Length: 392
Figure 1 (cartoon, rainbow, N blue to C red):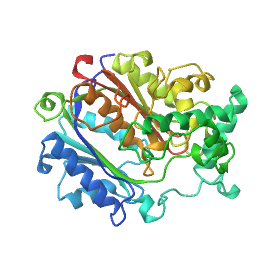
Figure 2 (cartoon, rainbow, N blue to C red; figure 1 turned 90 degrees about the vertical axis):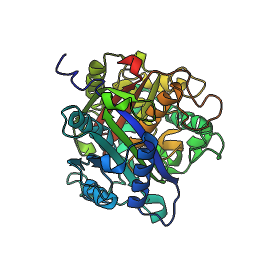
Figure 3 (spheres, rainbow, N blue to C red; figure 1 turned 45 degrees about the horizontal axis):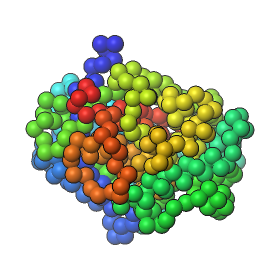
């Protein structure tokens, strides 16, 4: 246990920002990402010259960390541009925590940027999958539809259960002025069920938004964090795991490696799923939160279809309180935005001014928050657990 706890509570986020969420014509992915970095540093009260660790991954830059460093005009002592899909940034958080705690660096920035909507599409960086390309799947939606169809078959779930995830996400978005769908009105189960089919059983409203957007967070060691302008939010637990790259190689279409990453992250944190006050999950498709709630231990396998009835603002389990990738923002790789919402809920609880929301949009005094990232086609899974100082 001593070994697994070496980074527990040793690092904290002291600044965060997003930029260009929605549609930002005329901006490049790099410009959006750099803007988010500058804003996050300003919020923390840290100068750009103090950044000696940089972590970034995008679908637009093959060497994102080096390109961003050059654009910002900094020379980091340590950088990482590892790309494991949308969960990359939660994995970068683990690497940054290790680099900070071991003294390799003093200040880390983790960033992402995308102009996919205004640029007319998401630039793929994936090579053809050799065992699947001949079937011409519409990726990634075909892969998630395959998992969804298997889940419906194996556990007796219905399309209405998938639709409930989208309805709850929209209900949260209506409380969040930052959400892209904030002014679009509520959804009903029938709205989701009657939306244009994409790949059975998923329709248009079962699929995430396509937006522009960038995000950045600033991390430092806990001893330095208290000198910053904002309330530090501490990393208490973190783990990653992946079992496949291609969906055809996924050992079980209804069980992700979030089971392993979650178990180890909770063990490091010293807390259990029932202790979490907020749960932020990578909801690129409506099947995702159902699978992740089960695999992360919030319910047993097959019970997610029932639990999701309680994840909206009026429910007992606050999941994706920003509106998520289905109704808030989804600029191609969503993991850093999952993290921002986990952090924002805790900072608001601590009294930081983090923006206006309608009544119910901010949770009442949360102390612990889980952020979970997914990459590829239910492939890479990374779980981070965050807490206020009193939870260390």
